[in-house]
Amino acid sequence: MTTPWQGSDGSSWESTKAPVTVRANTAGTLRILEPKTARLVLMSSEEWTMAGDHILDAMADTVAFPACDRTDTYPGMLLVPAPLCVTLQVELQGGVPPYTAVVPVGRIECG
Image (cartoon, rainbow, N blue to C red; front, side, top):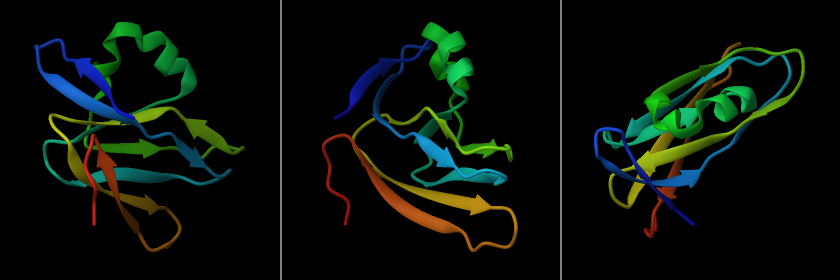
C-alpha cells in the first residue's frame, strides 16, 4: 500500500513504509542506488514525532545509523515521484559485505 505525500515545493510523492531494525552495536549506512529520483526518510521515533508536517524535509538518498547499545527500529519510508522499483544498499561497519535489495514503491512489480 502506498501513501501520497505533497512536498512543501508542491511536488507529489508516493511512499511505502520502510522501517529498519538495527542490531545492538551495529552501525551502517542505507543508500538508494537507483533511481536517482527516489528518496528515503529514516529517523528515530522521537525525531519522527517531532517532525510532524515537516517529515519530507528529512528526505535524502543516503542515511547513516549509529551503533546503539540495544536493538532499535527506525521508522522510515521510501518516496518516489511515480511508481518505481528502488534499489537499496545496506553497508554495515566491520567488514560485512554490502547487501542490495530491490523494493517496489507504488503499483509496480519488480523482477
